[in-house]
Amino acid sequence: MANEPSPARQLSVSVCYALPGHVWMRELRLPEGATVADALAASGFADAFPVVRPWERGVGIFGRATEPQAVLADGDRVEIYRGLTFDPKESRRRRAEHRRAKTARNGRIRPAGLL
Image (cartoon, rainbow, N blue to C red; front, side, top):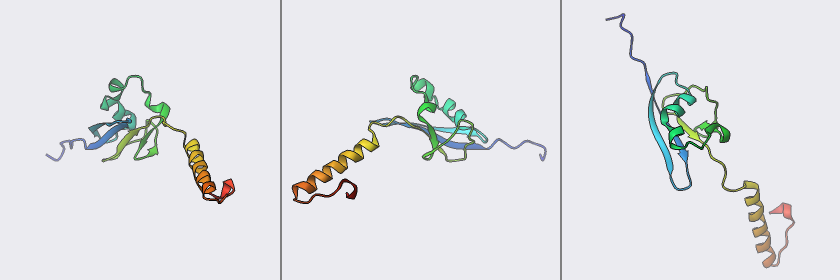
């Protein structure tokens, strides 16, 4: 039957949200041409986390920020980001101060910029 339409190609994608103690993940089959917004809606994320607004913190595909209308490819992992639990700049300052104090205990003093 040459005039019969071919079945729509399906994509396998996953949607994940990392929490401090575990990872929430859903594996989905979506039609070709599906977007990131489609994947979020189909995953049930809004029902599982009603107070989380994914686009406020960011959503990405394999670690790269993306927009809701971005078209998915087979095998994509949609990641819903959450806020940092610490300030990276403050952590770096603490590590530098710790190294500076350790060096001073050993009798050597280095200027702050040379650690």
